[in-house]
Image (cartoon, rainbow, N blue to C red; front, side):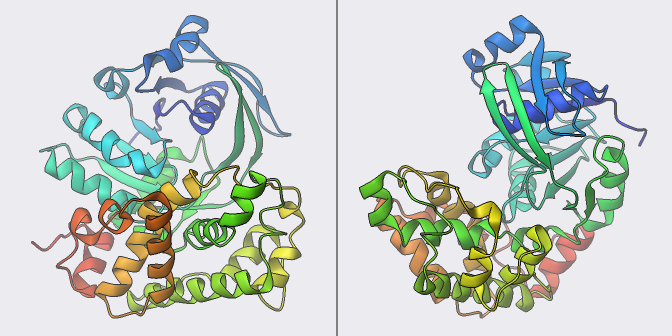
Length: 369
């Protein structure tokens, strides 16, 4: 395809606004979608977003081509559709765009969490979408950003290398080539099982929150989440969960990074074990805990990340008792059955696939029915 000039960003939270403003300041035509009209009313009135950027990031007024709450209007002329919403909203976005998509469009999830692209493709099929579009997902969000106001955004950092994979993987190079003028930071992430199973938030966030439930509720999060919260015993639980994740990946023929390898790659931090490595990471000092247990570290990361990893483990013969324990504790705390609400293999449409069939689907796009 020709180099895209027209991007649509779906989601006007801190990440979506940062991305829309950054793209606009780089010279691309950007449409910003948010399902709640009031949320983007001031953006429509002002015609854009004021962006403050870290060194090397353009800053100033990013002029939007359009701000809308209409899915059809949002994706009509888009060449690349950037989905920047919580992963729990991916299915709703897929339903919203399904009848408006056109052949050749690229849909990129930021990030996919675990099996996001697979879920998105399943919803499009269920909605009767016939358009030959390419769905891809990033392993993590490219920005560290925040919203400074209804029409303001700030980018603290742009990550230097972010793995990305398309569904099927044979289209990854096409996606990378299309977005390279805007985002040279994206690299080949293998396939969407690999990006999804390298989801470190699934290991760190839910367990660390749940194992510190009493402290969070007593202090409203007034302690250092990773430093005070990761005691030797808590770190041993995180290590057990990490071993399960890596073993699930191995059962699918994937070499996933361990948490220690990820800390070395992301932060150049090392240690004899996870407790020491986390405490050796200067960036973790000063980060406060969630103020409440009603937080995305549970209500998003458990159903959208931990459940699909554990479900893959159960399907392919891996013991995931640690993950199951965290999912069940989260379900008790929130009075919600996250095993039912989460990304189960049945919801993803892959519950009857062998390892070979699943691998063929993510690599080649051939889905056995």
